Length: 395
Image (cartoon, rainbow, N blue to C red; front, side, top):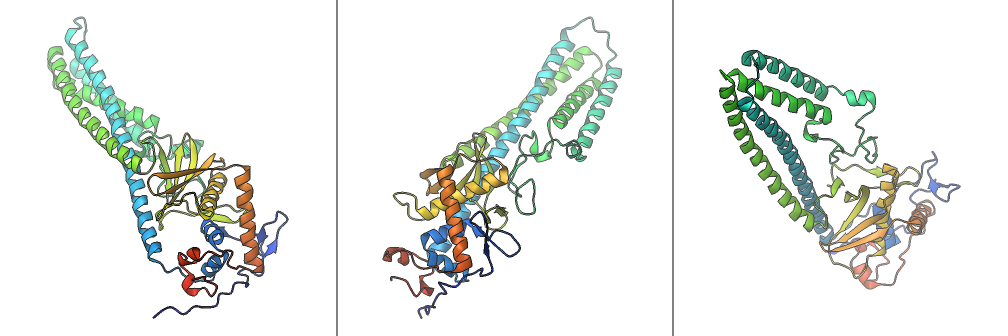
């Protein structure tokens, strides 16, 4: 049985108590800008009447909506897999670098213990001295790892967008930038302490079980060989993870070194808010390209000949949100249709003026009403997910 068409309240305002501000925007009685989401911009630009139906609680009914949600989730999972493989590559390479440094030190010591004849060394006493040094470095590293000393002195505050309720980070997909050993939440100091502890402990163990310098050099050589094999395993893992990251990067029009700062999974990604204009939304991704935060809007379904205005304004809305939440203006936003159709939308004065005008237009309709169908295209109505409840549909 077909759904009965309801008469939409096209002229009724959704916020009749709103007042126009000096800047042209509309505000609630308590002085806050009327909230306009990036999705509102897309819907209103597509058709004001379709937007009004959504604003008054009419849900869309379309297989394309569910398919779009499914594809967006697939894209999100692919992006997060890419980020995960990136992380595995960086972690394994970092471990390999640490271990290779240990190998070099062990090799130098092996040669020194074997060929320097004028060393007057008490092997046992020196082994104990190295063990104490290793324990000291380990304890300092653990304390530095557990105690939030960076916060106390104002260091290690990552430059990340602000979100509602979270001043410095977007959780859970942001990774602290500028860290070494980020999975341990550790930095350069901790790295130095732990490497030093490892090196001293290995030397101490080698010397402890050696009766003379020749035997000590043999133990060190054997340890060096074992450490080299372990380092080779970590290097292989890094190369494998990098290969997988490269494949996923190509699928998502990314470079393998591009950094993903944010990805919308419909449930956990937090809302970005511009208090000045009332704009809010969740971009599909925020990618760090050439040290700039670039918002990415993913569109599924049929690939158009040129970007739809509704999609373009939605992507520009995310550029504004990135600008306000990071304090840095992105040079452009990215709009992606499918895997191979990518559009770069400049975030310049012209784009800003167009976006602000559209936000104020929507706010005015929210305050005064008057939303009507703005086109004479049956095909547009045919693809509207709310035409089942629209009395002005052309089909």
